[in-house]
Amino acid sequence: MSHLNNSMNTYNDLSYFASLNSGYTDLPIYGIVTDATRIQWKPQNMKYATTIRIIDSTWSQESHPVGYVPFIKVLFIGNNKNDIPDIKQLGAIIKFNGGLLRVIKEDEYKTIAFLWNKGNEKGYWKIIDENPIDDIEKIKSLRDFARNYFEKQILMELTQNLSTARATNEVSNIIVKVIKVKEEKKLEDSYKLIKVMDHTDKAYLVISEAEKEEFSYIQIQDFILIKGARYTDLATRRIELRENGNIIRLPNYLKLLNEYQSTINIFINETTIETVIEEKKLMTPIEVSIVKNNSLPISSLKIATDANALYGMKYRVKVYVIEMGPEDIRQWVKGYCDECKKFFDLTIRDEVSICNVCKGIGRMVYQVQLFVKDKELRDDPEIYRILLWTHDGKGEDFFGEKPVNCYRSEYLYKKLEAIYKKLTQYNVYLDCIVERMGRGTNTFIQINDTIINSIT
Ligand SMILES: [Zn+2]
Image (cartoon, rainbow, N blue to C red; front, side):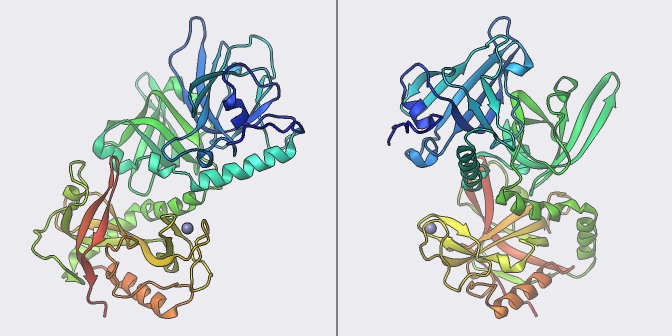
């Protein structure tokens, strides 16, 4: 890795900054904010403290070995609110003047920079707004890099979904959409109640009187990352920020947010779901699938998704399909690159799918989600998400057709559409095998050993 510093520049790169053993850079440095944490610890007489993490293209995942998540951590301490940056959105760009940040090394890949209170001196750092005056090219390239970074980055893998957070009841980081914001008053206590939702559940984030001003920027329709949240009441789905917790808005250009949005849409109309379920119950149920391993006893989704269920365990469940996603059936078939281990969009590409990362030839796989209710456990109010992801061979004969590009194959599109109509029909249910997948708190269930056998 080169730490050379171009003398033409009017700024220093972060790799140059990180190469310093101590001391300061002469020139300003810029960074993309990838994290912000409010901290409770403060030195004597100081009121405010926060840390942020910054990266740039010279100091990011790509310039480091796998397993390291590189960043430069900057600690701000101040007496006034204005002494510390108010980071409301990931991807914000911050500029530090030269001679300002002091480098403290932890190891080769961990660098901490301290920014001490500068009293009344101003202009030591600044959040770059939409129309920068200096280093315009640099800022443009940082913005492009940030866009790419958050698009690819493992945000999802570092977070839990609402239903997992609720099941495990651990302190979690959660990505959700803001559905409603309202003021509540109970006796002397007034607080803000923010209804949030992800593709698995809904919850109510309680913002206390003391935090209200700090998080006043949160608005309906925002996608936010709630850091350090925990359920305080499982029954009413109330969550609160723990000590050092934070709420950060996500940049709205993220493609993953669009995908999220379409699955959230499915949940928003609760009355529709209730109607569908009531109607399904009224009629004689029709089973439309066969399972390969029918020696398994009928279990429940509650058990299959329980925190204690082990990786690779198989459960046989009977479910009503409420909805399937993505909404556009042509999106059910994706390209998959064995090299990059990534799914990619086929849109209107050729039959031969080219991976947009490594440019290698991918293969066609199904990537579908089923939103289901347990047929047997009627009192269970939950909607569960089951994945039909066939990249690892699991569930590959579910539809009875090999996946091909649905933008090109009218035949497969029509067939999938017929299956969709059948599965979501009132009285139809699936008898299927689900396998517990994923690790740690990021677990999910995937269809396996199940074939749809009757769609006439
Ligand atoms: Zn690839």
